[in-house]
Length: 320
Image (cartoon, rainbow, N blue to C red):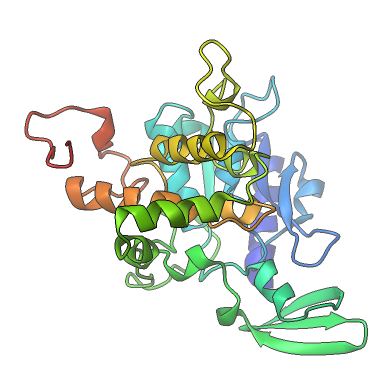
């Protein structure tokens, strides 16, 4: 991965020095192990802080629509498959223009879930995690252990169907094979086995620990509304308490807001401080849209999102 990181730094420095972009959005190494964070490079010198590692978990597309006021120039962004799908979605929803974005594409076998790594070392403090090929070398006070990255990847990376970027201006590494993906149906499968009452019970159990911090919303590139429905007061769609009804309303409305748009990047789950499996709420909706309309979000710049049009022969058997 260091070779990819070096390629990103070289490309970013070149773009900035030639004035082709005003900013490069990528990742920088965190001061805490496994906490690489979004980074904005504005000069060739700052580009040297960019990195690429198994700990680059934020969806950077989120920052294309949240750039500081006054920054309207062209921007470059580091994008793996899921991030590039989010970029496609934002372009199709007229939130950004394709000509204003330069995409530095990276094929990705998947990112590491730091929580899964921490669970391997209960009651121990991890002070350093380095990458050695397909393994991680985890060090702490009085211990050093090697673990396989494949065993501690984020859940969404196991079921990812698009590991190569969908759109790209410059690749930072050779693309992976075309069949390089997982089974997305595995996400919805546990829900589909449940009866409606059991599904509701499982949903309530899952959101029981929600503290309404909105980290899942804020990490999502789909949630760009100027005023979120949870913050509306006239009318008030959803209360701000942690009562079961308010918590359930927030998650249900947000899940339907993502219908036909969610690319399963997993940013919501990574951001949740309570470890709530947020992807489970959108998984069945994602599958229904895919099977009813033959549509997968963010895969094609030209394809029209099914929920943005009406056709007389649209599927309607689900309307009771």
